Amino acid sequence: MAHDDGGVIDLIKAIVRYAGNRLWPTVAIVVVAAVLEGAGIVLLLPVAETIFSQSGEPAQTGVTATILALMRDVGIDTVLEQLAIMSGGFIMLVLARSVVLVRRDVLLSHLSQGFVDHERLRFFRMLTAAEWPVIKRFGKSQLLNSIVTNIGRLGQTMNFLTRGLVTAALGMASVAAAFLVSTTLGVFLLALTAVSILLALAWARRSHASGERLTLANRGMMQETMRFLDGLKAAKAVRAEEELAERFESRISEARSIQVAFVRQQARLRNGVQLLAAFAALAVLLLSYGWLGLSGGELLVMAAIILRLAPALVTTFSGVQSLAHALPAFTALREVEADLVAAGSDPDPDSDAEVAFDRKLANEAPIILRDCSVKTRDPTGEQVTLVEIDYLIIPPGTLVHISGPSGSGKSTLAELLAGLHLPSTGEIERGPVTLSQRRAWQSQVSFAPQEPFLFSGTVRENLCWPQGNPEESSIWQALDIAQAAHLVRGLQSRLDEELLDHGARLSGGERQRLCIARALLQPASLLILDEATSAMEPELERAIVSSIKHSIGQRIVMIVSHSRENLDLADIRVTVADGKAVIEEGSAC
Image (cartoon, rainbow, N blue to C red):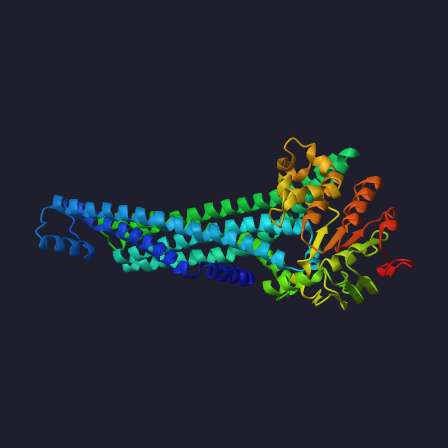
């Protein structure tokens, strides 16, 4: 796994940073558990040798001789008394080990699950801090694959690591116990352990390559899942469900074949290691008896050591392969995070005090755009202008209508004014606030997109998100303006009606009206409706726009729409074509 040492090191560094001061107590209790395990094995030696000595075989080890001498010094002379004391000590050791093991497992579980949750939250926070144009570059399926699949596999990786830590500690304890019985056998078992680890690391290259293939297959499967869910309605309308199902089946078959191949490889490796371990164990016991001449008690303890060490080696071998197989998911996650960081995050340093001050002045100032443009780079690296506008002043109490063909840049202009983009050239200001002061600017923005966002909760909870609990009279006033009051009154529980499955039982136009009402409830002086009436019939759309204009007050309202039905209601009309925004003659500006 040498070619991916960086991924392992990055993972270990991330775990150490997360664990902080909790790391060493966790490692310490793992070591204590291993020491108790080894001590339990060693304590079998004086018990076994004392029993074997009754058949004429003398006690041969320093451990047994030392323990028996200590007991005789305090007056414990009979074999039964000595066995009773040693047995009692062994039981006390087992009880202590049981308590320590419970604590060890709890601490390791906290570390493992806590780290996975930490990484998931970290990824979420990086997404919230990223610029909107950066997020748009990632497909929804890629982000969902990172959050669900790759972080889920990270949980498997942590499981392998924690089990590996425990297994390594137990293996070292077993080898240390072997040294107490026989230095020669201790060296032999230590060499056997080292060779096994080296073989496991060498074989891990194949496991890592398999893990990389699975990571790509999972990404493709998530893409097909999103395609299936997004296209199911359209597919049913033309009876093309089977085509979607076949594409999805192809993806899951690819992922399954990779996983089955890895399991087959693991099974063959495990069987091979177990066979070698059996031969090695037999060789150790024969060597112990025929060459080293160990006593019966020592042979019994060596057998116990080998029975503990062999499964540990098998587990270690399998664990290294499983870690190598799952590590590409962590690497893929870090690559996405690196892209988010490289693209930059919200640089706004505004404090809460500055935001409060800017809110006070915002309603009195016009929005001024001077030589503004939004540019990006296409997949070939060429710079592309999404939208540009030379000069525009929007006074308070103005309704602006932005129209243009699909792909012309009108939504980009709305996103620019919403603070989702920063201007590539030029500047936008409103009194003392510029768009570069992102937090202050967006504190005065209310935005309703074309795709209505509703979550599973009550109508009230959806309308009040994210500001809290406005007065009920304000809620009904916003619903009246959005032509949604009759809709809500028709629900059995009205504002407390549950919108299950993100409001799926409502029509597209009904969901849009609720989202417009939510936007109207926000205490913002700039309301932007980006194709927020696209699913409504012209008469309903005009009724909503008329109500908004009637209640506009000092608020600036920007409506992005293909429809030109409401142009006569606009104070300023902007037409966007081929990325160029033009203020039409006759508009108030």
